[in-house]
Amino acid sequence: MRMATFPKLLRALGHRGFANQQREQEFQVGFRSYGVRFLYISCMVSAMCFIAFWLTNGLLGRRDVWDATQLIRLAVSVVFLVFGQLVQHFKSFFAKHYSVSLSIFVGISTLATGYIAYRSQVAASAISAYWTLTTAIVLATLMTYGFARLQALNTLFLGGFMMAVALSFASLVPDYNAAGYQRMVIHLIAANALGYMLYRFSMSRERKLFLQAKRKNHVAELRRMKAQAETADRAKTAFLANMSHEIRTPMNGVIGALSMLNVENLTERDRLFVKSARDSAKNLLHVLNEILDFAKLDAQKVRLAAAAFDPRDTVVSACEAFGAIALQKGIQIRGDISDIPFELRTLMADEGKLRQVLLNLVSNAVKFTQQGEVIVSARVNMLDAETATLTIDVSDTGMGIPESALDRLFQPFFQVDSGSTRNYGGTGLGLAICKQIVEEMGGTISARSVIGVGSTFELQLDTPFSTEDSTSVEPSSGEPQFKDSLPPYDQVSSMTGHVLLVEDNEVNAFIASMTLESLGVTCHQAKNGAIAVQMFKDNVYNVILMDCEMPVMDGYEAVRLIRTIEEQEPHRPHTPVVALTAHALTGDRELCLQKGMDDYLTKPFDRHALAMALSNWLPTTVNCP
Ligand code: ADP
Image (cartoon, rainbow, N blue to C red; front, side, top):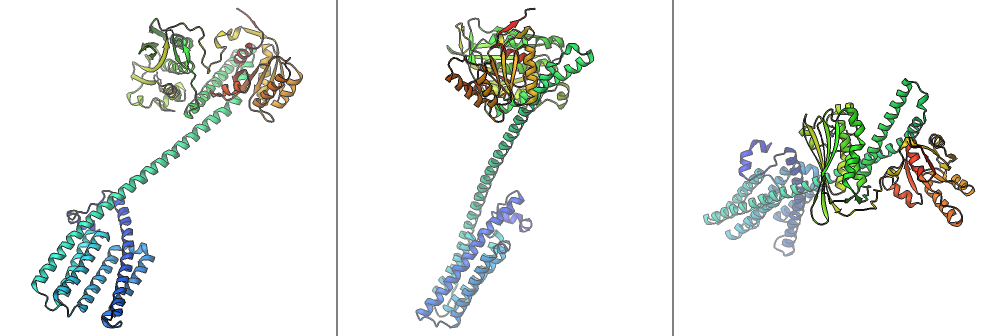
């Protein structure tokens, strides 16, 4: 209220309030609660001083212990003691009425000091009276201004009041002359000025400390909120990953069952239904895989495996992968590798991951382009004798992306407009995954686009290079090693051999056994690792398909026992074990191999994938059409 009434005066006096009213109030509360402590200490110290004077005067025999002046001293000290105790016990009350209570305290102490001094010094000389009075006043003024944390107007009022008291008592002292008054006034003005400066200093210091503390709290709060948000985000991602993982298992059944349906015997209508179901299942699987991929990248569980590769192959294979879809849509897709120097043979990076990024970009380009073309162009600039920069542009003549969306394009779950989800599907995770992978590889990815003209996604990567022919180009660990060396799906006509299928889920076991039989192999089943080990002891199998997670005994333990048995019985041939797992994370493959398995097949798998995996270990008859 005071601030509203005298804002100019207050500003002139140097009062610097906070612009934010709530903050001002908060500051004043803190400032005053400090003042309350000061008030308590002042009361107690004053009480002690009065008692000390009373005692020393009495003990030194200067005054009778019970004379009037001494009794006033005693009474004032008792008042202060009581006042101090009240302040201590009702802190919040005194903080609320701080100005009034401090004024009362200063008023009582000034009056009492002045009056007692006057009474004591009646007979003394003017100089002595002058010193007694002014010393008391100066001290009170300094304390009031400097430490009491009163507001400016209060302080001025108290200062004036103390001056009046001092002058009134001084005028009562005999022999007090004009020169004495003059000195006293100068003294008081100086004391007030000094006190006021102290007040300003303490106030601005308090404000600074207050702001610092606020900022510190704010930063701590922000940190806490950030940590909380990150935990929540991790929980969300973990939840998504778990859900995806759980959904993949029944999906195995759906996809497996659909792939086992003999579509030849179905009517055209039913065949369409089966096709829709299969396409939807595959789409769902794609979404699940993206979520798992994202979760894995988010949890920084991706390990890159660099190996030598020819970037020309990567570009060509990415284009080939979408050739059929592009043809269907009536758009062209082509690769441009003319800017890769002739002498360059291989680059060194995780080609599997790079291909994943490229496939994603090309898939988007094809998806969002209705006419025209998609061009994948690669350039390699050799920076020095060892390092080259690989730049791959995926350009399309599609709908384009608005300028405002370009910034957020690589954020998870972002899609340019929600309508596009309906029209084109997708999760909005593809580009986020690309960015994470490229950054993990130490590269950059960016997009530029003109609405209605097209978009270009560019990724850039520095990698070591070689100009020598590399005969043993290692495939990336993320890819199945047999991928390119196998006959295509339709050509695998039959296999022979005995397969032990270890799987606890009945539906999955049924589908897998039917698939195996359709491939021509004999399938033996075990419900868990323990049964599998027992069966292994008594029989010989060409391949064991081993689920990893099972009750009673899991796949890892079963393989460990199987390998131990093999060591103990040297006449036994090494039995290949192919892990079947719904864990599609990188690292799981390594884990399976490390545990003694020979290969790895992720669920859900279809007939083709199973045939591919088995053909590594079983004799295969290939039909060449
Ligand atoms: P998804 O394709 O699964 O929705 P992405 O992260 O791959 O997720 O893409 C995010 C969004 O970016 C897409 O939904 C689309 O709106 C936009 N987008 C990506 N690539 C292109 C492109 N080549 N042309 C136009 N829009 C694109």
